[in-house]
Amino acid sequence: MCGIHVTISPSNPPPLGQDLERRLRNRGPDHLGTVHARLYDAPCPLTLTFTSTVLSLRGDHIAKQPLVDDETGSLLCWNGEAWRIRGEALETSSDTEAVFEWLLDASRRGLVLEALRAIEGPFAFAYFDKPSKCLYYARDRLGRRSLLVKTGDHLTLSSVAESPSDDWIEVEADGCYKVDIGHAQSLHQMTPSRHAWVEDDSLVLGIGLFNTSLPTELSRLCQDSLSVRQLHQHLVKSLETRVLGIPLPPGASNSDARLAVLFSGGLDCTVLARITSEILPPGQSIDLINVAFENPRIASQHRGHSQEELYELCPDRVTGRKSFAELLKTCPGRLWRFVTVNVPYTETRAHRGEIIHLIHPHNTEMDLSIANALYFAARGDGSALVAAGSGPQPYQTTARVLLSGLGADELFGGYGRHGVAFSRNGYAGLMDELKLDVSRLGKRNLGRDDRVMAHWGREVRFPFLDETLVKWAVELPAWEKCDFGSRATGDSNLDPEKRVLRLLAQSLGMPSVAEEKKRAIQFGARTAKMESGKVKGTTSISH
Ligand SMILES: Nc1ncnc2c1ncn2[C@@H]1O[C@H](COP(=O)(O)OP(=O)(O)OP(=O)(O)O)[C@@H](O)[C@H]1O
Ligand SMILES: NC(=O)CC[C@H](N)C(=O)O
Image 1 (spheres, rainbow, N blue to C red):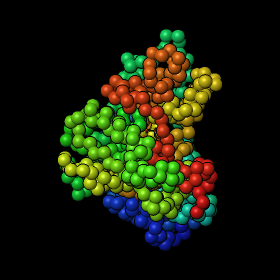
Image 2 (image 1 turned 180 degrees about the vertical axis):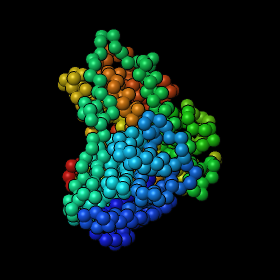
Image 3 (image 1 turned 90 degrees about the horizontal axis):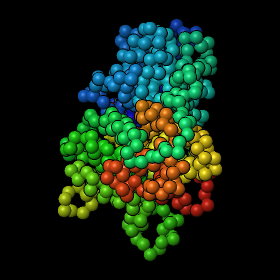
């Protein structure tokens, strides 16, 4: 992951505060660069200061940011991955350099917004088109990367907040923002204008038209259904983009992992691990990171157990081990490392302040409990069986790319409330709920999650949130995702929630994974309600 920081001020701003610089460097440990762009001929003379930190994941060299064009003085801070431009996969080695060339060319033709709309992938960026004195910034339409903005005295952009007490808000993922600096009469007048990702607002997330067709009496979802095969094909394509060609991490050897799966053992992440194994070259190992927490409230209810036993009884540890066994059976040739990350309560407390800072402006107990689990999972520091014949050893993952199964519940109807909506209002109710879930994906929690996971110099990738896959899922009839209407027939023993994915798991030889119930991360890892069972998720965090 990379870090971005941009300020606009009347003269050179003071250097970044130590803590902010440390947090930005954590996101991008390979390089830090700062560039000033001075505007003497604007109505008010200004200095724009751009800082980037880089975690280099594409190509054979570090694309040192901010990138500056010698001819025009335009510059780019780029955080994320451009997988495709105008629907075509990037051939060049560095996506940052390819995006910069693409934008410079568009600037010459006055078509920057059109060029930005053509980029697919998870990203946040700031691009200064110096000849037109316009600053552009945005988060991709699904909001997969963090970018915060603070207005007030002057405009500041940053991947993480400088201080949680400031007025930082998340940049909305609903379009590109443009600040016409050349025409602003003063620093206070730099009001960004929003430019929607697409003009057609009938498209969900600007990506696809939600399918509202109803099943006929003959419509049944089964293992031979076309949608099960199509889901497999889409996941293969999405994973190929995300797992092939990851450079060997600095200092790592060939047997070290380049890739880890955040592994609860649930349906979504296990299907990802299984298909990844079909795609990765045979010699590459895959780490499966499974996090479990000491939870004093639960420990007090199980006084007869040691802490070690309690970690092993954690719901996601139990499921993780079970699904790992099924993976070993179906992909025996792969070197897997099941990495157990056990987090003592003292450590949760010790990192609490840092996590609260990182999730800002999110600030509820539920935000904190989810972020706790993601933060320690992404640190990837635990134990694993590293040599045959010996017991588990301390181990920290070398992988700089992590996969998460997030998104499957929203796309394919995995939440309990999808079933409730169906029993109340049939397919009409279910479709309303599904449409709402998908359309708020970009507004929800991905920025928060990015900030806590990128803190360890790793990048999390979401194979279910590939634009092509999302478009296909949005345009698929609801009954082909989760056929609640067939619950009563008894033909399938699989739950209706995300049934298309369950059928895929079954066809991939994982019958037990296919039956896994949905469990939210904060309950599976036991980060929720650590002290009292009465705390509500919506309560603001007490400092
Ligand atoms: N205990 C855990 N340890 C490591 N990673 C986890 C854990 N719990 C969840 N994750 C990761 O976070 C993702 C999103 O978690 P969420 O709570 O939404 O689970 P989910 O959608 O039910 O997914 P899954 O079926 O993969 O558990 C998971 O897909 C997985 O990659
Ligand atoms: N981690 C990032 O955001 C990386 C930026 C860019 N994709 C690179 O690999 O250089």
